[in-house]
Image (tube, rainbow, N blue to C red; front, side, top):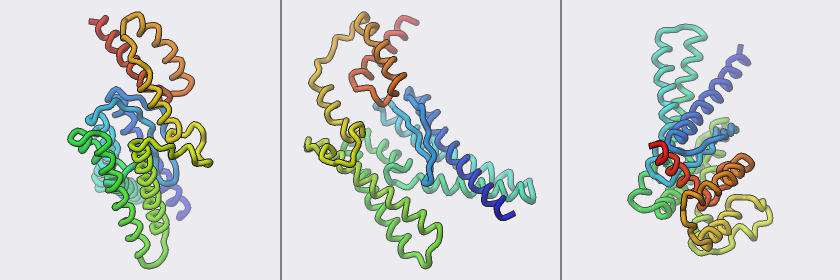
Length: 265
């Protein structure tokens, strides 16, 4: 009986996390983004969503996950009142797990949904980079506060271990993001001197790609030029995914989409 309850808890947890990530993924696609991968791991889930440079798109996509979790929690609490025995127990677990997921993900710490929501709200007022600087420092405060709170709890329980892991994850991610922003501003070869960082790591490849994009002259977006460039770009997406595209290639795709919409009219 105990083993069955624990197995049911694990199944409900991972199903809830997966539905939470589906919320991000489908909303990202609705906002003209691309999403082709979801990863589940012990600390939660991660949906790989490539969004247009729009604060609204980032805000809606970040909000979608917690809204899915909140909806599942409310439905679980409501349906539980009409059932009994093991069904009521399962629905109670569903409601509690999703309420915890919603609350946890709304913490204003990057890369949690709350941190992304905060960044999207500040982006329109302050610009992308200044908003990210604010979010990074808020994340450091939240992560440090969470770690201190967990460590000062009496005893040692599974919740203490998980809370510590989450706090360390937030702190490491915020530090990493801060180093990337600093590197971007100062132009220092920060990650290239790190032997443990793979050659294709995004933090190592980002700066050369950015410089290459800036040095290349802007092509004249004629209809013939766009048609010639689209097929190689689509082949690259099929081989390496959307994340491999440079800003220049993304711009060509956007121009091709606008051209198709113009012809359809």
